[in-house]
Amino acid sequence: MATLISDKFKQWQEKCINRHGELKKYEEELNSIYIKIYGLDGVMTPEVNDTEISVCEADLEREIKSLISYAVGCMFGRYSLDEEGLIYAGGEWQFNRYKTFLPDVDNIIPITDEEYFNDDIVCRFVDFVKVVYGEDTLEENLEFIASALGVKGKSSREIIRNYFINDFYKDHCKTYKKRPIYWLFDSGKQNGFKTLIYMHRYDKDTVGRIRTNYLHKTQNAIEGALKNAEYIISSSTSAVDKAKATKDRDKYIKQLNEIKIYDQALAHVALKRIDIDLDDGVKHNYQLFQGVEISSEDEGSKKKKVNLLAKI
Image (cartoon, rainbow, N blue to C red; front, side, top):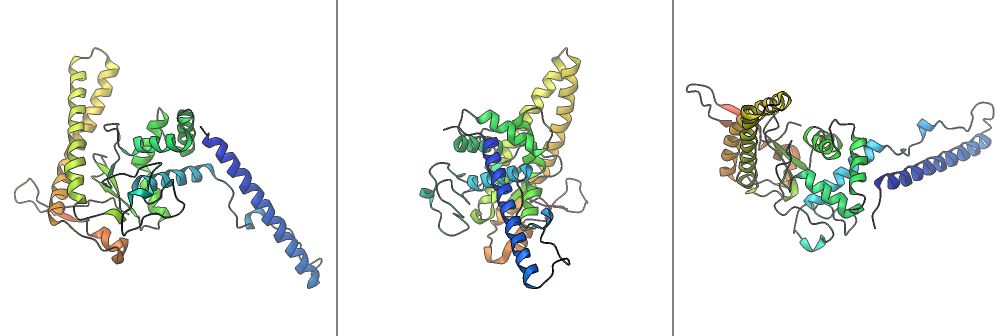
């Protein structure tokens, strides 16, 4: 049965308001008892300010971002729609615990600034919303989610894509106090290549798979987009189309240059087949993929250091 997220939020909002009111009422009743016992009439009042109540009220942006974070957890198998609580945080992987929504098979989910693939994080998220809330309300639910994020974009999917590109990882690192469980492989500020993995499912061949199965495919997709932009520039009679294509071309060139450097660093680490020990903690393991030295194309130049993971 199709469900509107907006209706679910209203129900949650009402529940929070009622819970907030009940707690305030109980605290004021207790205050009245203490005032009477200790003879503090005229010295204290039983009233409690709303800001002093420890139960949080519903916040649309916070709840939607929590929903997105939970969806990502389901994509990686940390959570399952079929069972409550934490499902996987290391140990033996059990695919039979996931039936309603299947987690990503290889623990690698690309984040692209344009829709190049049908299995990137936005497509996976749309599938999640469809499975959980129904296909009939999909577009309305995506609009509701997008409106809560406060991110620019021409459509709900574009807004959600921009959130994943620019803000999701910042929010994740903030939630986990700079000890992220999802790791963002990030080529740099041009957004040439980004992909998420789940730390607890990492293995020593993960980096190699990222490079072969995802980085090179992204590179090919951007090269195709670049050719298309160049064709529009050379053949279109529309000044508006030419201007947009020129802007896109410049972006693609910068992204490809960024990917070229990142590819060298990925290749270097992929050959090492680095293993991680979860007992060493996030901070230690994260640093194993930072400051990778690669040779510069200019002879005599110093080696360049490249971070495979986004800075936290």
